[in-house]
Image: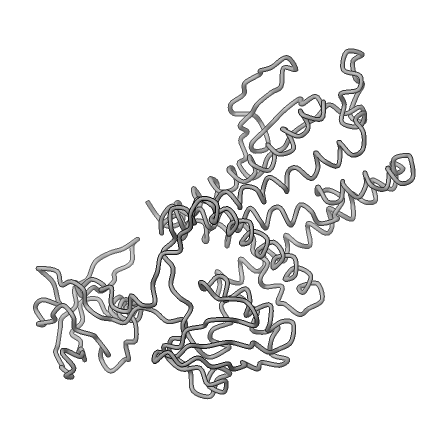
Length: 450
């Protein structure tokens, strides 16, 4: 199965699941508030599968275009209401009930994220302690005194338990003040504080893929220590042994197993010179790399496996059921608040608008996370669910947040907004969404071309 097809399928699964969760929130609370549901649809367009059930003869559909969904309530504004259904139309119910229905969709997205994080924390998440890898000379990181192997204990006043929490805190601090205060623990256990000062360069560093290169350091990764050697292959023929640490290939430095994979993949079938350390001694050897085809691309391979060397930097983040629930709520809250702050800072220009992702980029993330396993895909779903909840709460007329504003105005003034005002609001909302989608598609295309 090609990468593009995996991305597409993972994207469809993600959108279908999260839209179903969102719309089920509207549906459930609407039913509890006494509203009549005419249709519950996953997807848009012509129904592919349909089942009519319940005393209200509600239509439950899976439709042809799997990029959204909706719940259709009985509404007098869209047509006459039978006498038997008087009081059950959306606009007949009390305003607090309508607002509750509108809030329920985003709330269920946040609830899904909490449950997803809970499942991850209960089962345990393999986690890399945030630590400093190679530091670039002349960089912000070098000026702040960061050194290879330093563990990031805190960013500001927030504990850095993993890279996700560390990055959120780093971006928050950097965008707010142009400074990133960090508490570091050296490999010998010495703890010190420092500050990475980026000043007015903060906005540039928020562009996707720029942060680490801009700051001048890479995250720590497992060293290229050989854990296993295949019984046939280039490594065995070259005399490479378990426990060897590869330090260079053809003079190109190797600091991590990821470096080893990158360098070897780019040299299919070539003879290379390998520098390694064995029992504290430097050793040189030559190897003729193998070659294989992956997704239509020929890559090189050495025939070795990774070792658990450096396990001090790895641990399993795991909690009991109650603690996991508390941690899941906290993680969801932090991610929600961070998303809101970043969106606000995009509007003010403090954060690059290149962070707005469209369907192409989201599909790539979906495919990558699905390929890495269920845990990564579930974490991806939690993050996208939070984003979906936040976006739907924005006060844009055609979104839940905008409809809540309409209901609040009606509550205050005692009558609905005029039809003309609502039409103007819808037009403004459509323009705002089209503008947002234009940025997203532009960013997607720019990433593909780059």
